[in-house]
Length: 323
Image 1 (cartoon, rainbow, N blue to C red):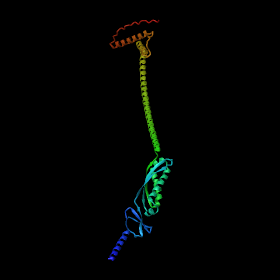
Image 2 (cartoon, rainbow, N blue to C red; image 1 turned 120 degrees about the horizontal axis):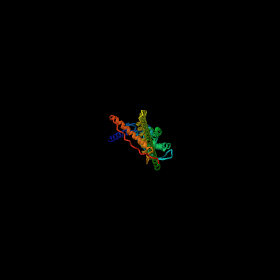
Image 3 (cartoon, rainbow, N blue to C red; image 1 turned 90 degrees about the vertical axis):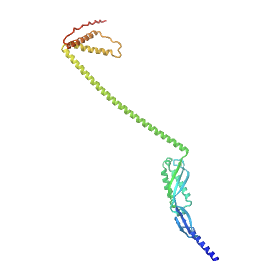
């Protein structure tokens, strides 16, 4: 009876020892193995057997990518502007042994290192550069922090600056500056529009003057042509009158003189500043010339009517005495 109890006890002890040496590592994790407190190796995901009571599990390292929030902190820029900045960091453990035994409290170490380098990078840049070159800041931080954490068996995959907040008074000043820049651009655009409009108006006036000059030139050409034809007509009339004088036709002379005399009187009477027309003393000569014109017309009509002539009626012109 006592022997069976001992056997059962030994069997249970053996089972306990076997279960103590079985280690199951989940996916995405690595376990370090220590023998009497000294690191001897790492266990990858899966089922493993270790020597119970001699070998133990040291550290359980997460091999997946980890996200850390970088808390807000104040930084002074190169142009002495105080800004509040925060961010986010992504890292992954590549070597479980180094991450477990090269640094203590790996998350705290990475956060402190990142915050320090954020202040360093932003202190070397102006405020305008911080607000406009965020990608350059992220790339610079990533390079510096990754180099610093490489001996720890860690790969920093990404660092992103989430927010950069300048002081309220500085934000108001920047808003006023932006407003001034927009007003400046608006004034420049308005001036450019007025300039273009003035150019177009000048071009239109120039084209109008050119067309007006061409019209005046054409009108002058037409007027000169009309004067030329009038001069030719007058020359032809003068030639005909000269031929009539050469033939001894006195009526033609009277007609020509009367025509010119009447035209002169018409010009005098139609003057805009003329209120009173004074007949000259030799008005009787004009009337006689008009009578000669009438006589010439009767002779012309008499010849065309078969040669019969009507005796001319003589009009007596009253004498004009000189005062």
